[in-house]
Length: 125
Image 1: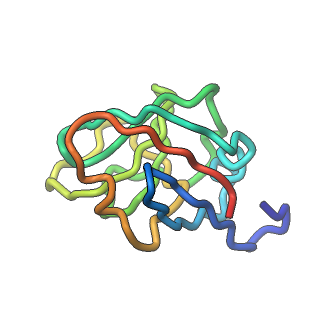
Image 2: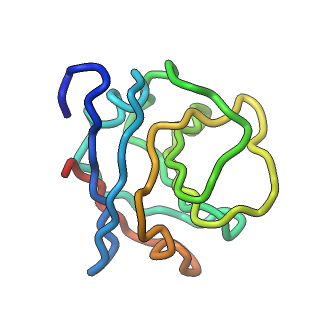
């Protein structure tokens, strides 16, 4: 990932034979997340709306915090510390302290819409 602010950082999320492209946000939290890559995570399902996994360490909490999300949002949940990828919107809001948006899936998020845990590798494109 480029250290130049404003440079778009792309990552690839690999689930079995499926590869999903995503873009990381221009934030300290997203840059810190990128410093952990590549990562292979066992991602659990939460509320049939998101896949989430614990990160090996906490990352920066400097980034836009929100209580809403869209399908394709990649977010950081500091209390975990967890990363979550939302594949379905259920109308619920994210509880306090909120989610820090670290990226967005460009296309193919439906690959996450499977029951149960998955193994996902996230790496720089």
